[in-house]
Image 1 (tube, one colour):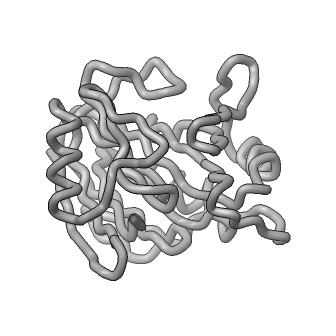
Image 2: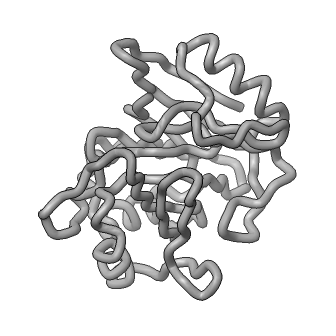
Length: 217
């Protein structure tokens, strides 16, 4: 599964533009009074303005080459601060054969860079915004994760993530190339104390040679 396009909400389009265009350096694609889109490797990230007083918060991950994590740390620390986990910036997910680092964007979304060993995508280029490969994960917050996971699989012919988990309160759908990480609202997003919150998410994914558009909440 590949996440081709992801649309999220923001209540501050100006600051969102500043963070993603100036701090991170993503290339802007289209900007209107109510939305802005950026190129993220082979994916597109879109933010739409919400008029609600609340601040929508999400958890999502971008895929980077497996040999670039330390370089990515140095690169990020020149731009913003990283979230520490157990006195280190790097979280090692042994079961997933992946390592990740985390930081917040201007909206307090949890922003993640992840390296997945099984993708075997090393590079000899220095780390830069062009090194970010694609959108790799989006956290979906839904009351019945297993039920929605089953519906996604039936519609798109994707699969439960072979490395897990598959629980009533938390399930992953897809593969190393792209994942829906589905949680109920009673959990906190690792590695923070931020509660998982239900907000609208729209996505375009590709499974094998077919494309699907999905919308949640």
